[in-house]
Image 1 (tube, protein in one colour):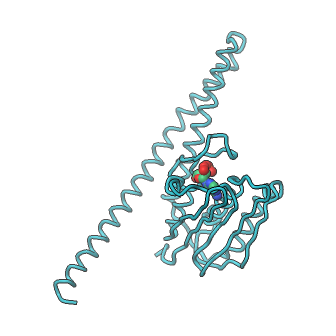
Image 2 (cartoon, helix red, strand yellow):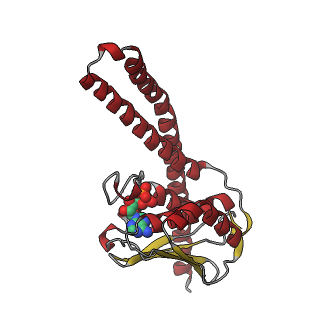
Image 3 (cartoon, protein in one colour):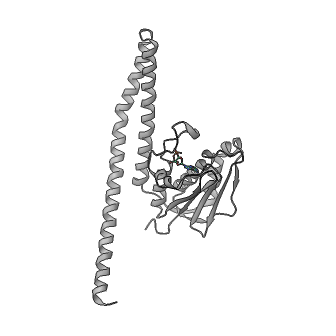
Length: 250
Ligand code: ADP
């Protein structure tokens, strides 16, 4: 390499490092903002919920059916908003927390997740396949458990087949997949599903949900220096892939 080119490469490297650092800071600021805002919103919302309850309880005899119905709706909406705020808090927490990384046997993690989903798996007659043993690697045990839990419960939830099946596997040590034979996702939605509060269905369809599960999963994976993506055929099924990087705690 000639000298000018070498200098240019060095300059570009510094520029890239600087913009990475700026991006990291701005993400941290966003997490901080989401945390502070959602934390402060909870208190007045709790007040609104309580006052709706007080009115219902203390003035019951004086309120006609229409007024009672409206107050109940107010209470329900406040509860829904509280659930959304909790989700936002959880999301910002994943970004802010100091994650502890340790060598972790992923077979144990997966066994724990399957244990917690055992009733659903049994009730819905889901066939779960794990073709090969998973490796042990350095990660945050609880958060990676959350990733498997989320992907698995989605694989079961978004599935209308009479015989539901899910396969969990590993390719080459750091690449994992969760594959289902569910409803599938059209390619045009593959990015949107990772956005917060984004659902492709009505609020009550497919067991409901706030639409934040995959957003949090993506954030956990990114904190593990990894990537998440999917391949899917509508009506046939989906495969979610994710990697766990080697340099996440350096
Ligand atoms: P939630 O399940 O609370 O809606 P998620 O963030 O986990 O939120 O998922 C976002 C959307 O992506 C879901 O509403 C659903 O439409 C779609 N989705 C997620 N996983 C699957 C899957 N395995 N098969 C089909 N659709 C899925």
